Length: 229
Image (cartoon, rainbow, N blue to C red; front, side, top):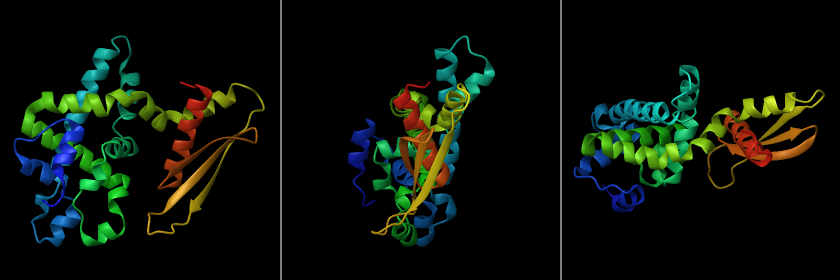
C-alpha cells in the first residue's frame, strides 16, 4: 500500500496487528476493479460488517446513557448518528479521504470527498477494527469519533425540523432557504450553498454536495447560533 497508513493509525489511536485488514478497508471497488481483483477484494464486505457493529455499539451506548427514554426516541437518536452525511463528517474529521485507494476515474472526480465513499470507508474501517481487535477496539473508536460528537451530528440530522418548530412557535414568522450551485473552478466536486432566512433576515449559510445537505448544514448552524436543541 502506497499510502502512509502509520499517519492514519496514529490519528485513530489504533495500530492494526493485521495491516492487510486496514488496506482492505481503504480499498474502494473502483480501485480493485482497475487492478483486476475480484470484487470481494474491496471494502464493501467490511462496510457491511462495520455498519452492523456501529449500530450495535451506538444502540448499546444510547440504551445505557438514556435509561428512561422510550424506543422511538432511542431510534431517532441512533438515526442521527449512523446516516451517510454524519458518517462522512466523522470520516473527514480523521482525514480518511486522504488514505482511500480509488480508481483513476474516481480519483479524477475527487471521489475522496464524496460523502458516500467516505461513509462507506468509515464503516469499513470499523469492520476491520472489529476483526483485528474485537468489539472493545471498535467501541473505543466509535465512542471517540462518533458518540462524542452526538450533539453536532444530531443537529445535522434534525436541524431542519428543529428550526421549523422554532419558527412556528410565533405566528407570522417565516422560514426560507435560498440555495445556489457553486461553480467549481479547480476541478472540485459540484457544491451548493444554502442561505437560511428567518423573517427575511439571513441567519446562517451551509455548504454541501447536494441541496439537501447544504440546507441541513445551514439549519444545524442556525440551531447552534440560536441555541436551539
